Image 1 (cartoon, helix red, strand yellow):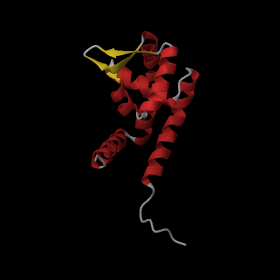
Image 2 (cartoon, rainbow, N blue to C red):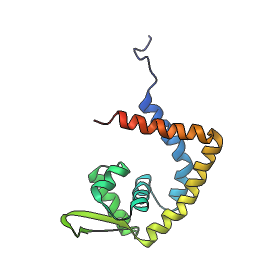
Image 3 (cartoon, rainbow, N blue to C red):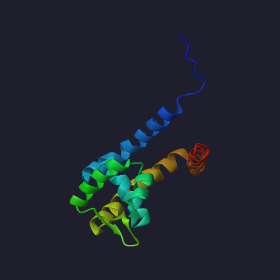
Length: 143
């Protein structure tokens, strides 16, 4: 029986692409005791410094209740520090500790080397096109 679908399964392809890319990154993360989620948090903090937890959740694509557990483990391991936002005591901000920032620096070299390999393999124009197309899809699908 033929399927009623005329197009390929884009969400599945995006997940498959993500898993293919992460297959190169995960061994380094695991070698430093990090989960994918913990790395996404550290990457956000490494790029932005001290960040409100709601923004961390949005940028790291981690639901709030899950983020609470992730941050608790990271705080226990000395990777992040949480505190009340001095300008609004109802909010919590989080920042990477020196230990967390050193990990970001160390892992960024491995990750950037993989991106450089991808750029060499695909070509700079194709990789740039891919980034552009993904940005367009994200913008297109915004509510």
